[in-house]
Image 1 (cartoon, rainbow, N blue to C red):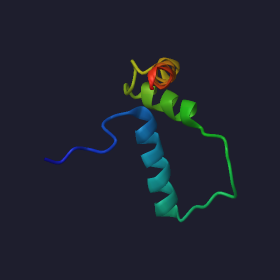
Image 2 (cartoon, rainbow, N blue to C red):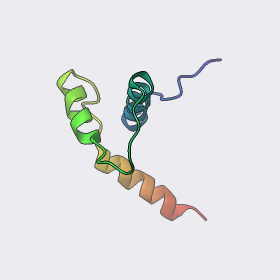
Image 3 (cartoon, one colour):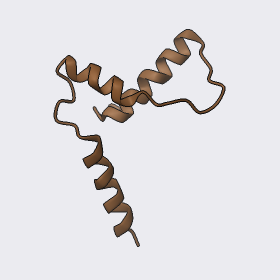
Length: 70
């Protein structure tokens, strides 16, 4: 059974968009750059996508799972 790797997760989809653009345009960075995720997310929401995604809640959930790990 084939499962889509990004599974609709906004941050995974954003990383994929960055990777596809970099590969297609043969782009390289000179090091760390601002993410741009929130601008990307706002643009997607303008098109009706990820309207219920809260990046702060997603981070809080991840932090809680990390704190609960043995």
